[in-house]
Length: 189
Length: 279
Ligand SMILES: C[S@@+](CC[C@H](N)C(=O)[O-])C[C@H]1O[C@@H](n2cnc3c(N)ncnc32)[C@H](O)[C@@H]1O
Image 1 (cartoon, chains in turn yellow, green):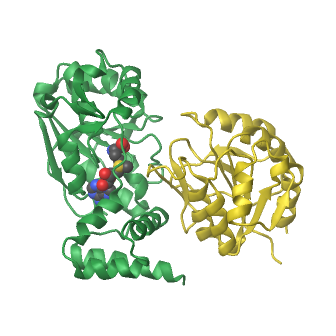
Image 2 (tube, rainbow over the protein chains, first blue to last red):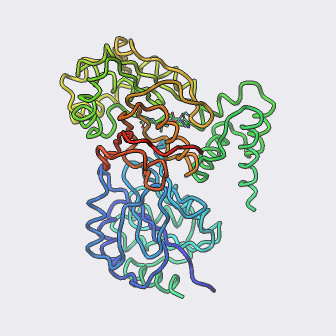
Image 3 (cartoon, rainbow over the protein chains, first blue to last red):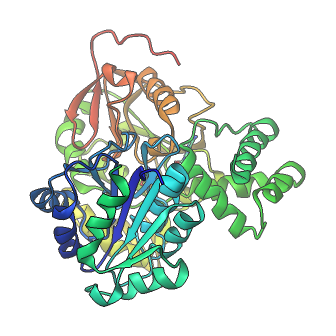
C-alpha cells in the first residue's frame, strides 16, 4: 500500500503532556502535513505552539487562514475558531457555533480533513474528557482513512478515546508510546 | 464524484438562479457543513430535498439564508482591537467633520453597539453615522432590537473593561430576567440595512470599515473582491479593521493597505494612488 499523505491529531484534557511525548518521536523526515486540534481553553494558542515547538523536530505553527497545509509542518488550530481543511488542502476558519461544546472542534477538523485527503489521511484521537472527535473519526474511516485511537488505559483521560472506539472503531488501538512509530511507518514510504 | 458534492453544486445553482444569492466563491468546506446543518434543522434528509423546497416553496429561501449565515458575535470581541481603535484610530477620525463607519456583516449587532459605545466615550458619536449591514434580514432585525441573553453580559463586561471602557458596561443596558436590552440611544445614528458583499456595490464614503469574521468564509477570489470593494468605499487614509485571524497576505488588494497594527489586522488605505482594483 502507498504511504498516507496527511495526519490529523485531536486531543483535549491531558493533551499537552501526551503531545510532548508523541511529537519528539515523530521522524524528522516526515514530509506530510500534520494538523492538530487540541482544546486548551485559553484565548491564545501561541503558548501551546511554543511548548510543542520546543520538543518537536518538525516545525510547529499556528494554522493560518487561507494558507496551505504545508508538508512536514505541524499546524495548530487557533483558539476560538474551528479549523477546516478545504478541498485544495488550504485552511479556512470559522466562528460557527461550538460543536460538542468545543471550538475548535476535532469533529470539524477530522470531517473536513477526511473530505480533503480521503484515504490518504491518518487520524489520531488521544486523551480527553469529552466526546469530541468521535464522529470525525467515523468520517475519516468512511472516506478510507486510517484511524488510530490511543489505548484508553494509557490515556490521562479516557473518555475521548473510549467514545472514539465506540462510535467509530479504529484501525489501531495503541498505547501512547507506540503512536509516533506507527505514524512514521504509515507516512514514510 | 461524491453525490453530496453534486447536490451542493445544485444547491449553489438554485440559490443563484432562483433567488439571486451567489455562494460560488464561499470556502467550500465550511459552506458544506452549513448546508448539512440545514438538512438537519429542516429534517430534509438530503440536500436534494432542500433544493426542491428552495425551488418550490415560497419564503423557504429566507430560512436557508438564516441557516447559512450563522450570525455568531459578541460585544467587544478581541478587546485589544477596541483598545487600539480607541487609542489610535478615533483620534484621527476626530479630525473629520463627519464620520462614516461601515460595519459589514454585523450579524446580531453586538459590534454595532460596541462601536457606538466607543464613539460615545470618545465624544464623537454625535458626528458619526454607522451603516450596519448584513445579508440576513432576520439577523438585522435582532440587531436593531439589541436584546441579548444576560448570561453573555458578564463576558462582555470583562471585554469592555479590557477594551479600555471608561464606565461600567451595565450603564449601557437594562436587565430584565434573562435578557439585557441595550440603551436605544446608542442606536440614534445607526442605519441597519440589507447589503450583500458579493453582489451589492459601495454605498458610502467610509472613514472606517469593520468587517470581522466574514472574509474567513470566502475563498481567495471573493476575499479579493470584497477587499477591493472596501478600498473603493474608504476615503484616502480611511481605516479597515478585519478579524484577528483573517489573512490578507495572499490578496493583491493587500498592497493598497498599510499596517496600523498588523497583528490586530487594522489597516489604513494608503494615501498613494492604489493600483486599480478590479476583480
Ligand atoms: C460570524 S458573523 C460575524 C459577526 C461579527 N462581525 C463578529 O465578528 O463578531 C458573519 C456574518 O457575516 C454575514 N455574511 C456572510 N456572507 C455575507 C455576504 N455575502 N454579505 C453580507 N453579509 C454576509 C453573515 O450573515 C453573518 O452575520
